Image (cartoon, rainbow, N blue to C red; front, top):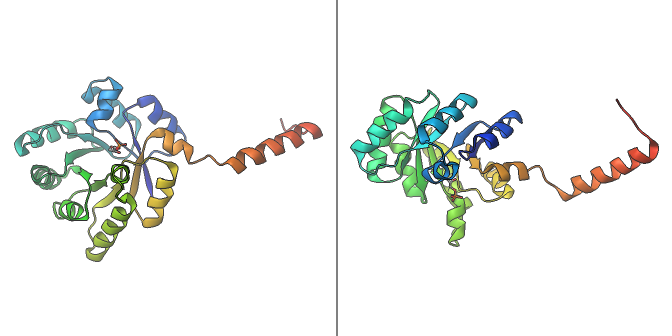
Amino acid sequence: MKFFVDTADVDAIRELNDLGFVDGVTTNPSLIAKSGRDILEVTKEICDMVEGPVSAEVVATEYEDMIAEGRKLAEIAPNIAVKVPLTLDGLRACKTLTGEGKMVNVTLCFSANQALLAAKAGATFISPFIGRLDDINLDGLELIADIRQIYDNYGYETQILAASIRGANHMSDCAKIGADVATAPPAVIKAMANHVLTDKGLAAFLADAEKAGIKIV
Ligand code: G3P
């Protein structure tokens, strides 16, 4: 499973990129607003740093305006994936932009029917928001499993990009189900390394090393 980082914080992306955990980046208008930076400028900086796809989202809601914004975003770098919302205008924009050879990430997906339409529109990525479904007592992971089954039934090449990830367990759960990609905040990716028995075991090893006077360099 590929790991994308869900942030527009360049320092956080750099830290994880140095660890080799960044296969791509996703942003959205809320994350750009949080960064306090100009969208074109910060997106360019991220694209220069990361080799994989960098999702940048349109803010228009009408087809023609989405196309204009999508083309402008795609000019930033070859690794831009234009992010469009899962609306009829967004799906039409997806079809046009993918027809021009651009990567498109269809976002704000909350149902299997929506994911089926995105695949038919030729989306490169579909972004089901699992955490927001869990927030309203629905089952985000069940949605990932349903989309996996539908896409596999027909050989759709659209990649399932699990989004709105809230905790480290979501990452392994998505991997078990077969999501192609999971995008998570930097803190969640780092938290995947944590285990209380690792901490306890390391403390014991270090205490024994100290007692025995073990020195390596
Ligand atoms: O990038 C979209 C998605 O990951 C948003 O997550 O936590 O705002 O629901 P969240």
